[in-house]
Image (cartoon, rainbow, N blue to C red):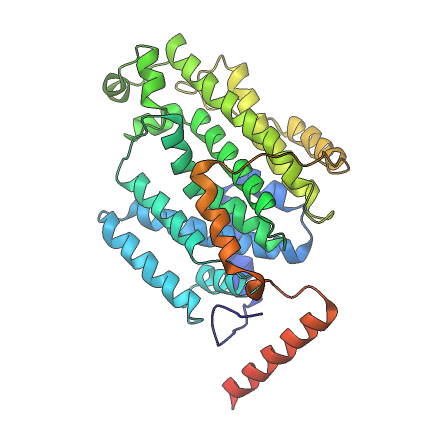
Length: 342
């Protein structure tokens, strides 16, 4: 394996505990799904989430978003040089990027999506919205696939589908909250077709049957992508499938809750009851036993650059899988650590 940095380092239990707390506080749905992951993958997934959370908050809460993005890119550079900042999330993500050979283009695209958020960018078409969702969520899907040591192009494409579907669900759920914060993610051409004035809606967010129809279309597209993701989930290690199915079903459940509210996510915020979550977790265990056949589906055009980035990494970036490869990697790791300590 050719690691991104020459000098490995050890992530402390305190770093992992901090990452675990961040996901518990930041995303109940993601945290619930992560409980079903094998511990090794679970720690890596939480490390990934923690860095994504820190990056999002930094861009979102800093008045000068351009400066925040530049600072994040500099932090990412130090991460990929093996010299992360003295922050739990940076150390933890650097460890993940090293061990699972995550191409730098992927977290860079994530940061670009956060920059789009901070700039208040709007999206004229569904394809434009896909491009945004690929950056802020498809990237996470791709990195999760790499953490589970699945790098095949078809699997990465389906992981991006799942991430985009989840983001579309979030958008459908948070229409009112986003509008009150001056943000609008609904495709402008869909709003125009329903004769909804975007500026007037942002000024005074109100639910209407027309807005509800736009939200319904968003959820319908999310459902298409949830279905597309199934063959990719089947390619994951057996121990990982229940968690990813849980994430799929829990997020899709948010969509069903929006529907049950009459597609009104302006005045109300959809919530999946605890009992329903438990039912979905049981369904996830059952779904993980099925193996639908692969289809000829291509990647979303807006996600192809992520699939290509993983492909360019090539066999040289493949994490060690066999016992011999892992033994060699560990030997090289401890040799470097001894040199550092001498």
